[in-house]
Length: 221
Image (cartoon, rainbow, N blue to C red; front, side):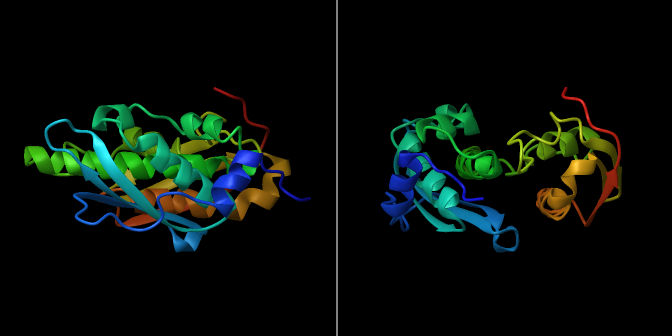
């Protein structure tokens, strides 16, 4: 079945804006990985006094939605302050594009997370703090990270769908068990891979194991 895109998504994909790298950028971040099929790298120039994003560009590896959301994200970010970027949600990008197919919602998550990663890194550097701050690798951190893993069919977080059944953290080794419905078999590999990649990107994670268990239908939180 062909995926239907809004006209805005088509326009941003076929004629993306702000492609490339900012000369003299003082903030950069890469989100995603080629292994999962989508990756975005942002470069920005942020005014140290006003904390305003004066210029921003992106490089993208991935599908049409990945390019469209990255392009739209740069247009949303330009002229905003660091604090305004931190307050953005994936819904901001999705609405500006007149919606995304559920199977592509993760692209808006990727786009916004990339923006936030860049400005948080910049903010930490300005204050002389560690980029990781007071980060603690625990169950709460794992659950928070997994809120960005989106079910391809519903477009909803696996945490909100109550699919995260078990989380164990031990000296840098993370184990996560996901409970998935009987009709989700076609998405097992995609969700397992994306979950594992999110875990591996967390500071302090040495190994990440994801187990998929087929069970009864989950309930929304």
